[in-house]
Image 1 (cartoon, protein in one colour):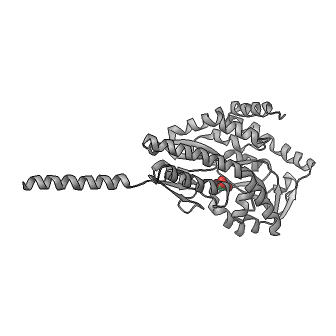
Image 2 (cartoon, protein in one colour):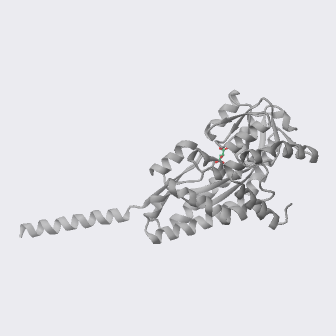
Image 3 (cartoon, helix red, strand yellow):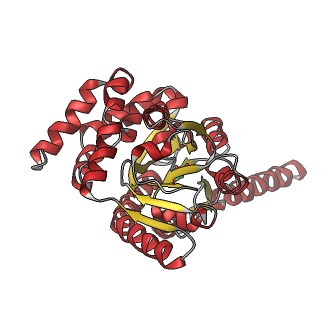
Length: 334
Ligand code: LMR
């Protein structure tokens, strides 16, 4: 009898433990480096809301913005080790992982319009890049848009020669390195979280970024001049630890995919608007001179940066560059 009770108690305890376990939500730590009031920051929050609702709380998404959990390089390692489950690094940050083709997106003036960009990210090129992530233990879920980059420094930058001799912070991309060298500048790769202080203390003289990043991180308060160059692009790959993702119950994964699809649409709807607003806010702040290029100056920037394509075609892949050109031509760009 005693042993029967013990038996029953044992099974009851085991059952309770199993229930408690089942009730524990699956936690997705989503780490990123930008402010909440940016396209990526807002889309991450939207994903959290949608994912938690769609899974009835079986999934909990913890969003860590502003590099509060990890900085650029660390977050990639943390994802591969499974310390975080989801990231959305800029496409310029995959080269150090050994996937240099992502630097296609860094080629100056590669996208004549956002319509070409979307064709690329949502078509075969986008898919083939995600495929390359798998051998690194990473799965690509979506591309999130941000916008075109402007140049800032502590001197007016009307002509490309104005960058000569300046130390310019870049993301860790060889294409961006070549880009700054083509302008006679001295490229300094650096984590996003360190840029404000580096600009403030003069460790670097300038940087390139989207208006939403410049405004939310107050770079415009520690730089005297900004030129609306729109010379390059910043966008993101939302990525997950593959083992984690593959190990999710199929129904949960399906709900999360749906939430990601919706969050992506939301991100891409707000990206341009947020950057337009940020540019307006930077102008209104009165803290930095904002210079608009005239047609001739714009052509000079383009010419000065054109050699980067040839230099980097071996790294990025001429086939990929040709495919982007084809998409652009199909959309009526020359
Ligand atoms: C940067 O490092 O400048 C950007 O990639 C930051 C970001 O995530 O937009």
